[in-house]
Image (tube, rainbow, N blue to C red; front, side, top):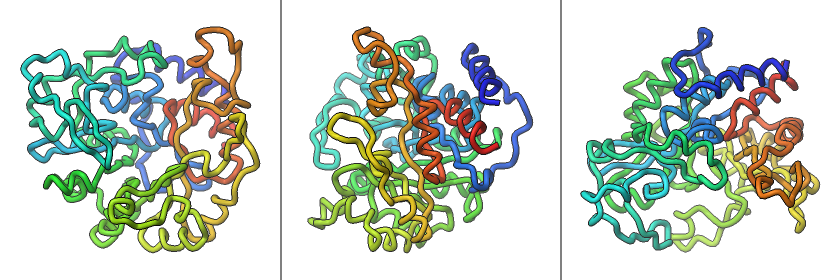
Length: 366
């Protein structure tokens, strides 16, 4: 079965834009795969297409993703668009547009000074004149073949694509405190787009995620859609840090912390190192009890991010000749890494290559 799925994956990747869905999609629901973990196309299929483009989302759907993930930021005219960050010099050709040269500026985002071009300084019409580019061309040089082909999509366009294709959406609010501070709150337009497209109930195929806590707590009072608290391997939610709260993400993964998260969220989305830590040599060590503790608190557990490249895998899951210049971007034993994670009882994974995550899932759960 896994060989069959991989052959379909290769056939999909041999094409450019995915023009059709090969079979009639099943209606998406929040947990339609039952005991098998869900597969989330991380920023689409970002292993194969420039992230956060319709090209990437279409490819993710064709490769078997249950959900597609748009990171959301706002334009000046209050339209939510899909970008990894509100600073867009690394993901678009904005630097090649002399008409926007004067908009290059430095801003403080979540306590960090960042220089570049920012979505909140552009109208949607202006952003539409830009074209998407591969964010990490050294790691994914093949993706640069698609540079210049795609516009920045709106959240509404991503939701409509998901609905047509029978999959769900898994939006992340990026820098919600910052956007609140400049009068461009993300949460209200997010809920409005979903509502207009017919998704507002607890069983609809939507997860709303955030690294901050306060906005999720507020959302829990405004929507029945499932909310996911993101938990990084280090640090603290920015809203906590900005308020002088001494708690960190470590606090969240204690049993008491998980019970608190369960008071407003459906689940947690955690760095893989929270589940399988790495030793000083970069190799995996014994798993933590996070999955069991979260389940005991009534929370689902999704993990991020599964990537194919050796440089993105634990050392003990890398393959090939380390002396070869191509080694960092060569595909390692990502299938073994997925099998290990799935075997620990996860409820979902974010994958840059959802075809690979789907193939391993089919092998283990069908």
